[in-house]
Image (cartoon, rainbow, N blue to C red; front, side, top):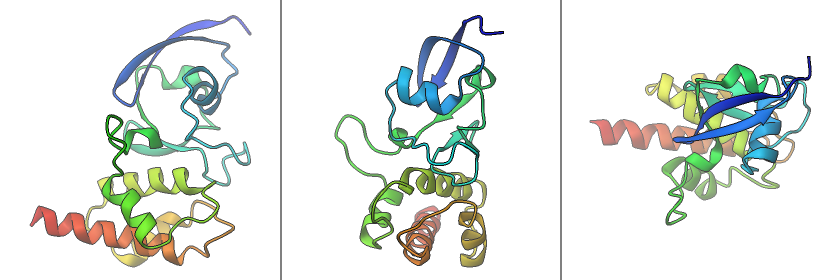
Length: 163
């Protein structure tokens, strides 16, 4: 049962071959094998959302997915949001900063990826839709209001850009 498997993972637009034991989670492989440490692990039970990534564009708790289950899927982590070459923040990250949607920062990557997934799936989401979707993740510092404000501002800016 612990026989290592050679996997091909598609992460942030790049293909990676890794050898993993079947019991290892996607979060573990992202952090330790691929050195993508933006995906945080808080509870390891799928409750907090700090480990949220996009798996085939769907927000997914990386601590609940075995790495072998992600083979063949498109995985996006928080590192995919910024311009890696220049380090420029994307519009959602800029909104989090402008609206003070982060404090200690531990939950921020999970919220960013959840929000990206929600805005991609529901570009015309209302404030209440956004608030409800974001309630899936936990934050102990901000009280959520500033996070909701940041996501709503991004949604509005993206709607205006489409028009």
